[in-house]
Image 1: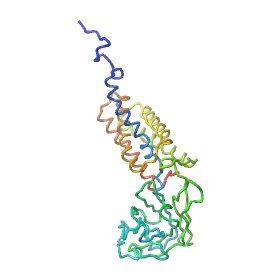
Image 2 (image 1 turned 60 degrees about the vertical axis):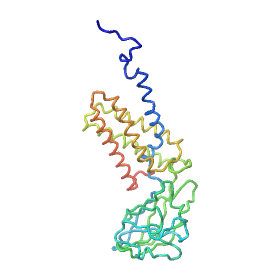
Image 3 (image 1 turned 45 degrees about the vertical axis):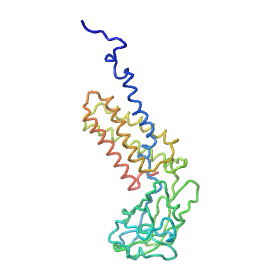
Image 4 (image 1 turned 135 degrees about the vertical axis):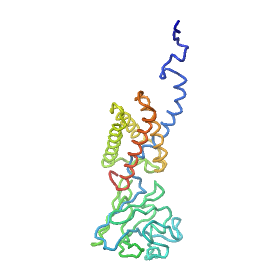
Length: 314
């Protein structure tokens, strides 16, 4: 005679009804909610520590740009020589020895600066402290154009880094070497880029929404080669996640960018994998795991590339 299921028979309960299984899932849910504010930073524009430069009219032999700031050997940020991957520039190069009017090389004399992307005509550098902006290091800057050996070809006039408006920071510069004109562009802080709460602006909001839409679209389309159907389930998972992240970032404390980027993304991988296991029950775990890894890695790489090139940074 076939055994009849009764309420006390746990084997008769579905996974959704099994209290023990629900209880075991609570740590995962709690961990996911704990790290949601972190993951939002991965889709946010680059933090203030990213500074971009556009150089036009440079001499033909110019290969690199350097930033000169007022810097004294007694300053806490000063180092004798900070090696960079810029041609063959060594510790005895003219740019490293330059100290006219108290201005010294930011790249070669300032601790915690990564400038390997400062080749002409478009370049950027990064301060290792993700919440630090350039105006916190110096009140002004000059641009120096260098050849591959670190010889100084041209030095601009000084330009102020001090923001004229509250809650803004220097984001980029434009230097026309032929006309010797230097302009600094400032940008409002966005929430989560620094320890204090900062206002959202329309350009920033549109940039974040565009990045969210791009992320959702790419991850949805990537479901096609993995034969996951229907695709709307992928879109819904990503839409809900993005909305939750956008809401939670408004009240989250500032956290270092790279912590959010790498640790937060791990949680996104795990959370979406669990969601897809529930939504695509007929598919193998291996296929769902491969899709989750591929889709999130692709969108992460695109986000980093957009930060690199200054695309949709608000």
